[in-house]
Length: 564
Image: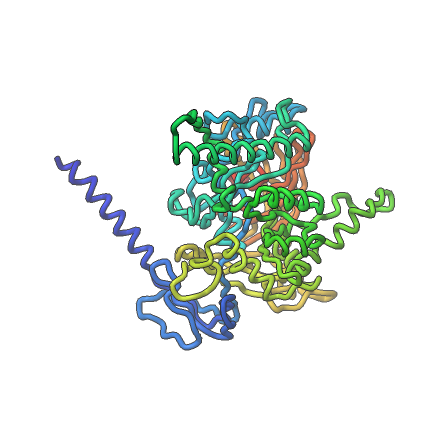
């Protein structure tokens, strides 16, 4: 009897503690406030209470119960929104042979097979990859740690969709904090997502022509089934009962323009094909990627099609050297034109928002947004594409995207120039939950927010707090096949260099950065004949290290020790 009473008591205490945490009040004071929806406040206060923005303005009284965060010299923005990601989705399990999807020469096919196997079982009449009924909400997982890298860069929300298939799932808009799926999801489903890919593995469709044929067939079948079901419901006499088909029925909202259809398309011809398909089936369409969308801005405007514009701009993959083969003219032209795309969309009146486009380093997102500004996009338009413009396209602008009283408290405090090299997100709020980062110590005489660069005679760099250099032995928790790896790191000021060695080989790290309590870097590993970019974010406590390895296949956790 006592145990029966004890369990509800514990639950009540836990709920009380949770409610108390959510009721925490904060006052961000002395900050420049970029509201996005209105005028910028040069020096003001934002009050956060019960997970919401309680008040914002230049002459706001600080409540007596609020925790005060003095943001003098910093700027408060609405939390940034990444409009196409795989965040929150469990990575496909590893196959036999070691690495993700198995080893050997069939790496790509094995990875695709592993991804298909990881999908929930279905009684669909269509093969995996051609099943529009897949709900991304059903494969999400809760937990704050998986979002750390994005959140530390100032992102508070994202659109999450699947990684593989012609239909990659009905996406969900999520917040980047929460222990349960229900606490993550803001809107689900948001849209159907379609990619012009093949299914491979010897199945149909195995060619691009087959993909377009399969798409038209499934949309035609869905349209016919809906018509038959409507006719049968109106007067079933003399009619054979239409059979149920969950895959076809999942397309009804798209055919009725009740659900957007997002087409992943980067090249001009892909975008034109997607626009033709939208017109043929009268779809409420959106382009995702859109690296060459600027070339068809007028048609995008004419069809009222928004763009979720990738900031993962094309880069030169081979080092410049006298012996290197010259790049084709088309590649050079693409690299020069892509940064101009956002300005062209803006000038044409096309709605657009930014996405990270699978970039492994979030620094590229802000750097390339800066390049878009250098190529004609206004700074205000760039900030809007990261916040309210994104929320509008995703249909969540009543609660997210701007700093207004009554909206969800998704906020980021940035020190330094948002599009500069030395910006730092000191405070991030997600659903009113406060996440704080310790600012790394800047090299003496080096660049800091608003500071000057070093030069001849400058003071040598100093370490960012405790030394993060050394040798680390870690275990990467790839589902079904943990990977052992060794990190050999050297630190000079806040710069980290070194190697990552595992069963996938040895690779040099890039973009290494030491912080007061850890480090981060990017690198590439070879698998199945392909190069896979990964980003690593780590926290060091004593001789213990833990963190996240993020890749196009999704985030996984790791832990280990620093060797003496």
